[in-house]
Length: 487
Image (cartoon, rainbow, N blue to C red):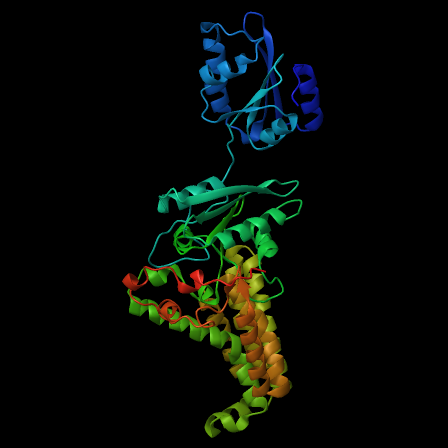
């Protein structure tokens, strides 16, 4: 509890903020009897101009106009209502509240003789301005992206969904960071079971600090051991508003420009917002390309290894003759050759990302050309394998969601090992295991492989194909028919 003795409050706060040079304790007096007052704030995260103009100036200049008795508890309400020209002012009675508000960028105002205080919202956090999406760029469509400031992200969603049913529930996660997390949904559209389950999972998170939404994702997803992501994320406000309209739930994390969206199904990770901003036949064509690219990125190296190792009779004779001549100088079997090239490709890709942008592009392009040429010239790999791996890598870049692309790149390696050990039988076995796994997955109660399994024909019009926009006005059926079991 705040004490009526101001010195005790000052002693407590100075002990809490010991060795914190940026915490300012501004002591001053008010009234004819010169009552001692205190204002505490962190200099780097408050708007000092607001403090000087809307607090000190109005308080010092106009205080004597009103006959306020600072010895009475009503004085706090009088100061709050008559002198302070700041929008959000709240009354506090606990010292712990005072500490939390100071850390949150607010000012705490205390008066000697009163066991309460005022918390003034004067926060001014530094943040990046709204820019263009980096990982989800489109040719046609909005060019706004979320930032690290949660207040800006909320405003971008509110701008698109002007309804009082859009709810924003605030939580704080992290014992040390006390990160602000906001769960957003449209009441009456989102399933109450999903909303309640999401709230329960978020409240169960027990960790010291949260720095990004990716950490939240790992805590609340249904199956953390699955290679496939069950929660989507996006940096685009238009995607979030569309998903909320479909009955999904979004989670915003302060300090992260990526918003989590769930429930998420398999087809969500092969869709792009641009599909809805172009004519339906062109959107369908682009989607079909993505599904073809998905199959190529996952199975092409494995099929090549299986056919060249075990099933040469399936290759046309003219092509087989060429492949035999090309591979004659290669000392490794096809599976080792494929694993070596895939590993090299992944290393080059990571090197290009981590290095500074001008150097990274040069390293990735020149490195791939030089290493590929040298590997072929000295006979470590064949030029056909270089083409296969390059085409597979390009196909993986067609997938719009990065987390799904990573899953495919990881799954390629066990599939190549299966192909090298048992041929097409191994590939089919691996494919069946993946299919069974996909069908068994759930994302907050929604079958992950919807609308293919369980079958929902009305939802096929927005899955592998995209029907005209006027036929997509209803919420997906699989969002209505949820499983009764949510983990």
